[in-house]
Image 1 (cartoon, rainbow, N blue to C red):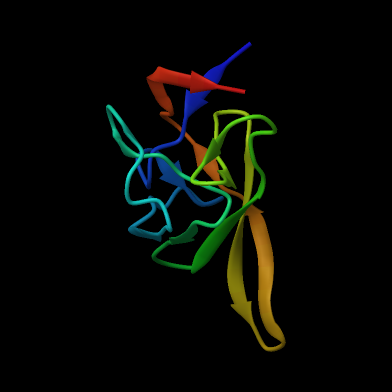
Image 2 (image 1 turned 30 degrees about the horizontal axis):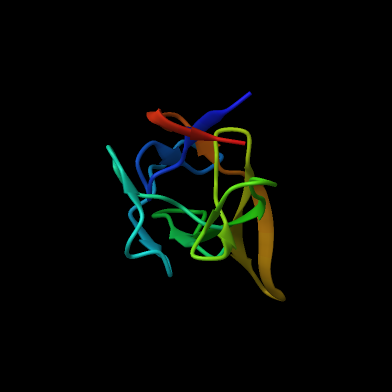
Length: 104
């Protein structure tokens, strides 16, 4: 069964609930109603304790420009700065994937 595609930073929050502020993505062409579709290569920026997030489990069958797409069932991790680099702070939360475009 299909799940809605994640579009950019729409509805993304870090583990403490801070909304995403920016995304760096190679996808500039494929869009849905809420904006450009997210891919495995996207890097998400957050304010506050979590500084960045990236996707670790993408869609298994849908690709955008040859890169796996991000759907509602995908998993992402947010990271916080630590003395030894970046440490995982928890999962990124998707609140509103695009309901009008779906894949699996």
